[in-house]
Length: 309
Image 1 (cartoon, helix red, strand yellow):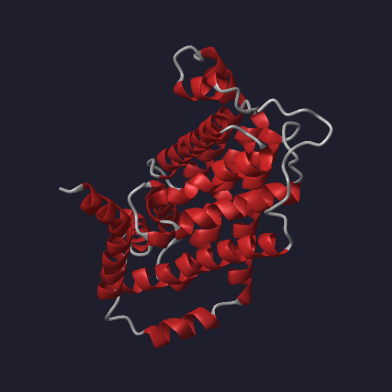
Image 2: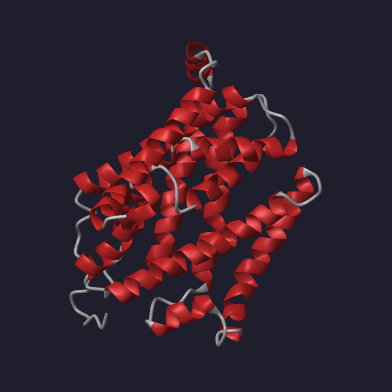
């Protein structure tokens, strides 16, 4: 295949995949009465949407706290700046195909903070590995046998083990541990207990934000709504996905909800699309607010302390 054709295909493929995924979503929801769905959405108590919105915003703040805990003292990283970086990064990830928006995190640290590309890239990889590790633990707990209260007990036990033991375990096996080698080789921020606490807190808050409207918009139980939210987050991790995750995200939510019981597929996909749109709205609006307030463009370099990065 000619080089020019390969280049065109590489550019076009994400958009082709997006169109196909969105077509699949439209096809599988064509029997849904959207007027009834819209009535249902507006008839839900305002408190349900408010709690979900607050939880999404809280998730962004928690993730901002994690970034701040790692770079505070090395970069100019007050809370509002860390939050601006978080929502800007999240927006680019959402709106860019194949997760290419991840690069904005590296760009921000490099252009506004003077951090080398190597350090910023390895920091991003370490962040994502930490996210994957914590999400994997939650997934294992939530899909473990037992009733809802037993699963909660397992979850609290795993959180305690994660917060108390994981930093020590990483140091203990540092000579063979990929995560530690990534962090130490390039002198990235060392992951403290505080960082693991932020990582452990983020997922329950975000899962609550997603599962709450799913629960009230569908004829499902609490466990199904939580399972749906967890599997939906795994779909967002996959590198090959359409722009904004349209189609694949809704299908993953349905897959998760089906684990503990049958769900009306077309109706669930339609309500999942509503929740997906809520996620996009909150994230992109937050990024616009940060940009309007000029928090996204603040110089991250420390003024009085020389920055060796």
